[in-house]
Amino acid sequence: GGLADDRWNMPPWFNFGVQFVAAVVAMAHIIFIEVFTLPPLGEVWIAWRWLALLFSLFWMVGMINAVNFLDGLDGLAAGVGTIAALLFAWHSYRLAAAGALGQTTVAAFGLALAGALLGLLPFNFAPARIFLGSGAYVLGYQLATLSILAPAKIATALLVLAIPIIDVAWQIVARLRRGQSPFRGDRGHLHFRLSDGGWPTRRIVLLYYLFTLAFGLVAIFASGLVKLIVLLGLVTAVVGLLFWFSVK
Image (cartoon, rainbow, N blue to C red; front, top):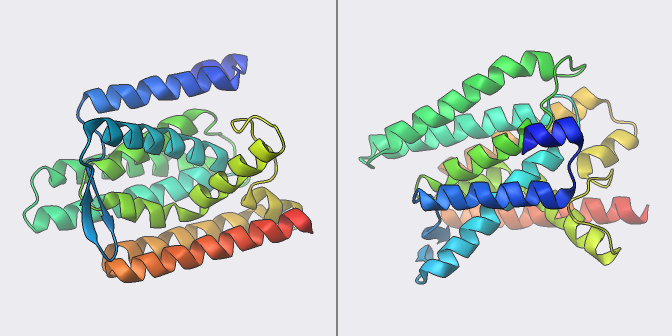
């Protein structure tokens, strides 16, 4: 789907259909969300299989589009994806060391993804010579499935990728309110707002890297309640900043 989009500039409904099929393929191979962590309640199990599948579909398609919309500045999506993949691998290794079955393989998947992105990043960092293009769809899909393949990694992914996820959610609501397609990109995203405000590309990208790493470490080491407080604070900050840009 991504190759076709790069070659022929396919309409949004085509890309959404391919994403839907990709998510269904993952779920057919038993990759779906059955349990997630909700502080202070702890682990919450989804009782109905249809609800688990629907939630998983929403998560995977949402992550694919969040990463795709993040790919607006040189090196941004590739660098954030590298940090996220390394953090997921680290988290899986810690789970494997604690005796969780299958997590060594999941950690290897995360390291393989990070290795592939590290091979691209020197050529993709500003000023870019090679572009990720619709390969961002694949990156989002891989991060979405990695976040499902280990206990509690949904919460980790929400913090690691909190800024692009919140940004995309805000933009989708804003586009629907304006009567526009939520799947067509524009320059309303936070990284574009900062760029249009005169911030250098490298500064914006490095700032995203820093926040991704910082919130990822919080996700791995902090207690559930601290994670919830940090996430709520981040939602407030990002939404407030986007609202300020929209009325400025």
